[in-house]
Image 1 (cartoon, one colour):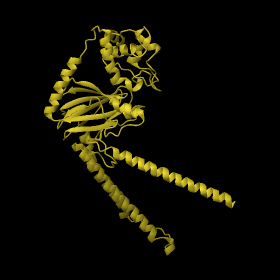
Image 2 (image 1 turned 120 degrees about the vertical axis):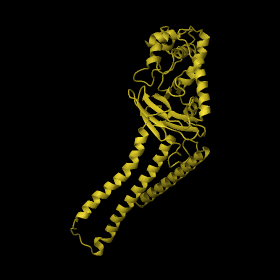
Image 3 (image 1 turned 90 degrees about the vertical axis):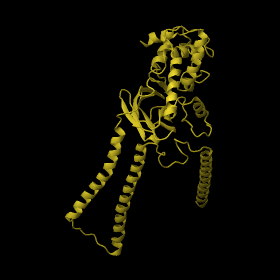
Image 4 (image 1 turned 180 degrees about the horizontal axis):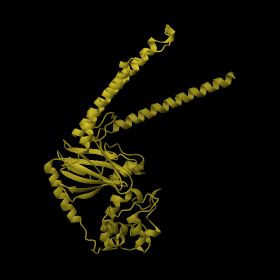
Length: 399
């Protein structure tokens, strides 16, 4: 028995030593990892405990409310538990106190009813003032619709300067590659960099209308004090007025699926002059890129266009080599891709595949972009079919 007990103690000692070493190693590794990145202005900071620095009045009010409520709750906690522990210590049986029934004067009954009511009113009044201000989306200078989709944001400028501009905002593919590698580089904006940030003017009231095409998403930028759900079939709205220029970051704040972590938000706030210049350039860019769906394309031109569409929208899931991933079937050698019946692949790309991670793209890409990416897939890797899908076919399939 003694030998068994000594063996058990030795094993426990070894286990403690191993656990301690592992914890120390993990701590050193985490500290080293944290030291490799820095604070991201407008985004998260290393070892951040408090809110993001506010850049709107609403966010400032939210910060004030946070500390105001915390101070009241702390005071109540200290007072209540202080009285309770004092009473327990002072009136314990071991010092001779006996249990007895105490009188219940009317002032006690009134006190513990009126005082909490006054505290609740004192907390509710400033909170209600801020909440009402958050919901006042009237008289906006710029109105933008933010559409959540698996897994990116679509922005459409529907009123104010920039009206008519629309684009998709997707996680930068280099960050997806870093994530897939399992050994991401130490960059401050990891999984927050996008290809097309939302651009707004400083000092202007910006109304954000949110909706979604598939599941529930949430548009959130902490520095603005904004978080609004985007629900399919519903239209919600919120607003902000940024008081300083710069780049500000957020993420989808609703668990929307397997790509939830890859749905960042990047808002670029520009001065009035820079914003006007951006609007002018964006409108010219859109006009130059506008495609006539009745245009008949040559195979090489459509493949070249499709390569760009594939790199921006498809490569994260289907990979650059077309081999797919665990959740996405390969395009290289696929019977649907190589089939001479174009309607099969058109149906998949336009409407997605029910019960899988493949979503429909009919509301996200133009007919020319869809025709180009399908043509690219049919003529890339080992799929040298020489088939071409024209935009007119996509238009017909969408009807």
